[in-house]
Length: 120
Image 1 (tube, rainbow, N blue to C red):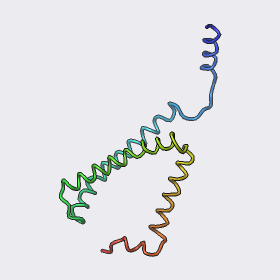
Image 2 (cartoon, helix red, strand yellow; image 1 turned 60 degrees about the vertical axis):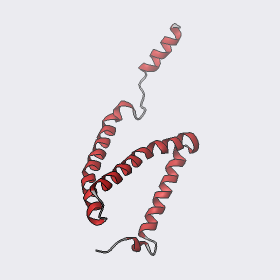
Image 3 (tube, rainbow, N blue to C red; image 1 turned 45 degrees about the horizontal axis):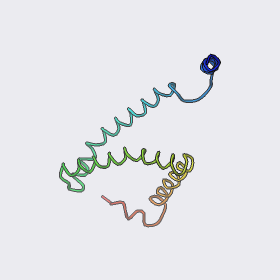
Image 4 (cartoon, rainbow, N blue to C red; image 1 turned 90 degrees about the vertical axis):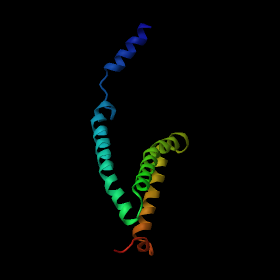
C-alpha cells in the first residue's frame, strides 16, 4: 500500500508539460461568454428582420429563433456522440470540414447560386 502511495505522490509531483487543464479554463470561459453575447445581440435584430422581410408575427419569429437556438446548442452533443461512438474525432472533424467546404463552394462559385440571393 505504501509503494502505491509513493508512486502516486511521485507521479503527482512530476512536472508535466501537457497542454490543457486548468490553464485553458479562462480562454474557454471567455470564448463562451463572447459567443453568448453575440447570440443575444443577434436575436432582436433577427426578430425584426423576420418580422419585416418575411412578415412573421413576433411570436412566430421568436419561436423560430428559439427552436434554431435549441437545435444549434444541441448539435455539439450529437457531434460528440458520433465522434466518440462511431467515427473518432479526426474523421468527424474531417467530414465536418468537407461538408462545410462543399457548402461554401456551392453557395459562392457554382452557377445558379445567385438565384438564391434576392435583389433589393
